[in-house]
Image (cartoon, rainbow, N blue to C red; front, side, top):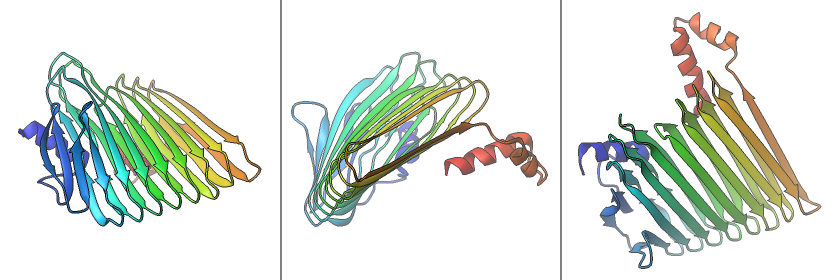
Length: 305
């Protein structure tokens, strides 16, 4: 891998060297490195681009890295990755996509990640998106995530997009079984003329299932953000959806939370708040010696943590 690809890999997956555990690294449409373990297998799909990740029952304290980097302008790809997680597992999965576009053609990565999580398993899933390059070609990413949680399973999902992606549509659909739990945390910042759309739908089908969705976003300059969340309580369950956004300059933000109770004991809450940075916050930081720009940056960074 060249220096540009290595920098992208560090940005989206925190990798400075070959990771421990199972991994599959994809660069410019091809697999450039792969490793499996005694408990985790990675198999190339035969019918389309992508891989199957098979995690054996009882696998604990292991990690899987599956980052994608693109540094070739004009490259477009669609990848399907399926995760089959056995019962009683506890693993961390680190994904993410980085695109460097120094040319005039559009570069695009679309990915569908499907998780089929067995009983009483715990999955932590981290997905980061990053763009760089001074070319006029756009950097586009459209990730889709499908989650099916079996009885007693728990998934923590963290998605981050802070820099350089011109257009993105992020779609997440989840179905929860009995006593399954799902926590999703989204952090997002747009600037320039960037556009970011996030769509979430969670079906709480199981008794005593629960979900918590939290989105923190900042829209700067002429960018646009759309946040849509749908929580369907189909059994005795509890769910909470929260979208907090800071709007700056000439940006636009739309937040559309929706909750539907289809059961007497479905307890559902949604919250949405959009506003500018309070002037007194900036003034207070400026009294400590920061410039107005530094104070603004400090507030934004703290909000997105």
